[in-house]
Length: 223
Ligand code: C5P
Image (cartoon, rainbow, N blue to C red):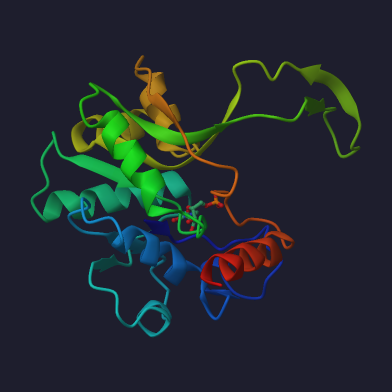
């Protein structure tokens, strides 16, 4: 789980993964969902080198914690894969990468991903078909439409994304740090990751208004 971002779009005075939501830091909810999937052998969290908060935020966490995060999400994920290698993981082992900021993850979506991809040659990702009409903004600062982009066959990529360690390492090394998810790196090698439908609720907490929405949903689940 990459959790080394600064959350600059979140409008908070602390990294978004530590913002309290429904009584706990955001990333504690994410880890709780992952812990409820017994098929996962172990969870590894990749933090920023300067992170001093994790152990206090999630005192009961039993996985690996590595302060090897990089300047981009792709660099943090690559550092996590290196950590897995150092622990003895092999080319053919499955790795699931999940954004810390997707704290509404439900264990059943992870299980759906596992069962859809387990026998797949490549792997896949949770995703959601796009319902809205898509507008491409004009270049520059002005928020005006350049044109409408067809939403046919369009999906929004979510996480977890599930690939074999060897393939993912190779894909990220070749794609460089610009990629914003694992699947796009794997696609560049000519593979076709499987799309596994989750739900809109698996959104990534990103903008200031997302925190209130995430909190309302988490509270509604608990009650
Ligand atoms: O920035 P974005 O919302 O795309 O981040 C997605 C996930 O990647 C978050 O969990 C964030 O903490 C993580 N990330 C990271 N290292 C970075 C940037 C983002 O681990 N340098």
